[in-house]
Length: 131
Image (tube, rainbow, N blue to C red; front, side):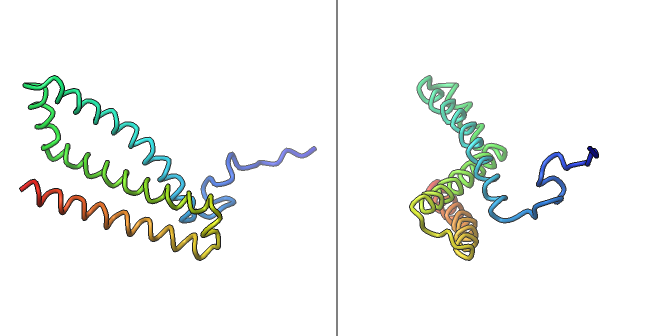
């Protein structure tokens, strides 16, 4: 029996499958889920600093107000909104809606556009009310 070389995985280096929007969105959905779990830990840290009060809360507030803290919060907001919208998209699929290929791509692009828009609105009105 001849020993044929086979790819290690069908998607590696484009050997079998082309990278598609649906693949990217699936991977991004998983990444944002992990990011939200890790971000939840930082939320607990912040809530604990409020409960402790005093210097702990002042330290946490300084961290969140720093450029790195604001970048983290922006990324967390973007991940939350994307994960929510893509989750709604999956729920619609579970109900049998939107399986036609044009609708799959249209809903995918809609998740990206709406996610960006909603995140921008949250930050615009959040920063406006903080000022």
